[in-house]
Length: 115
Length: 111
Image 1 (tube, helix red, strand yellow):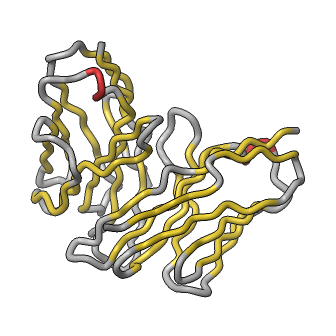
Image 2 (image 1 turned 30 degrees about the vertical axis):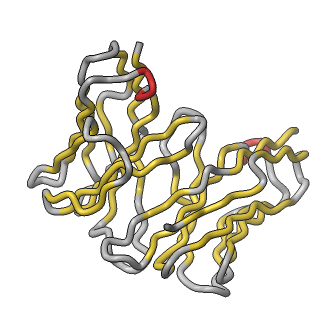
């Protein structure tokens, strides 16, 4: 069974640009969550999607947005990039996200560098 | 707000020297506690899910235990390949059961 895939794996952008990252969950998983990981802050929750609807949202500015398609694939977009957006962006999938103690499985991440 | 605190931040062990990592949590209602292992530049790799106090799970040299306020990850006779950052996370019992992560323990096992 294929795991969570994320594209691209590496990305270099300049300040002010925008970026779109993609995530394909494990087959049969309908919940997709996004996290930002930086050395100083650890894993910070961005948002979660289930059945094309945003179900949970972390404390990030509106420049960070996402969406989910009918096949459960998800994209996240960051507009007007800032230097502080440089991070590893991780996507995690689970079956429904609300089953008792449901486990999230992570993709390899997209490393974003903003210059 | 849910909180997860992991200690120590970093741990250096000699090969074969057993130890434990701690994860203390505050959550309105626990629906699951998770342990992950993360290698540099990679996504977290799932290790264990624990659901209720008193539960234990084992995998090779790792054993995870859970109480009402904390979880321990015991590493028995570690090898250099166990070197990684170990992350703890909790899922709460709120409406959509948000997941909160700790900042991790960076483990280095020296041959």
